[in-house]
Image (cartoon, rainbow, N blue to C red; front, top):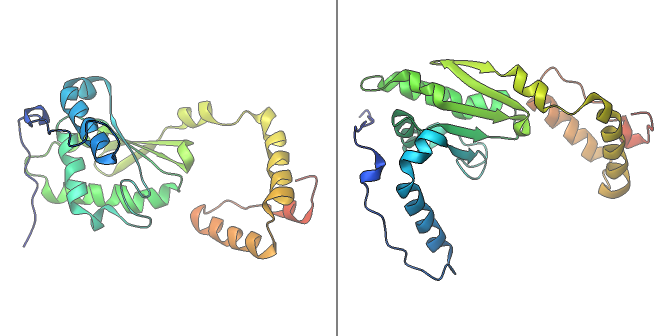
Length: 210
């Protein structure tokens, strides 16, 4: 049995606000209800001037999960796009990781449905990876673009890099207590996440010139 996405013409503002079960605000449920009602009340303003922003791990998805693991979440994201809602997804991981977990499933699902969808709405999605240092936008269905101007404007100034490197080295050696096994484990992990980048870990051996 194949699933389908029902695209509605009526905006979410037709939904009936839900009653707050805890007006005192003591319990988290009350906070969630108030948030839902605030979104309901400001829906048009959010579409025109705002966006929905989601952190990836343990918020939008569990660690190592993809949108394919949660088709209901993926269909909700697509529905938001069809209602002209801007969506941003933040991740500390790599471009490859976010592509595998979010981009590829989302593009695949929209390509699968097609009927009734405006595929150009994928351009409303913005991705921030590498801890927010890299901004990615969509130029077409499945075609992504790295905003180099954003990266250039957001990067650490060259004059600050040596001082930053010295601070990391000092803190890591003197306060973090990292041993040889820890360094090796990090080196192996970094290679899988950031292909083509070499990591100089000699600071762990006391290299003051790192």
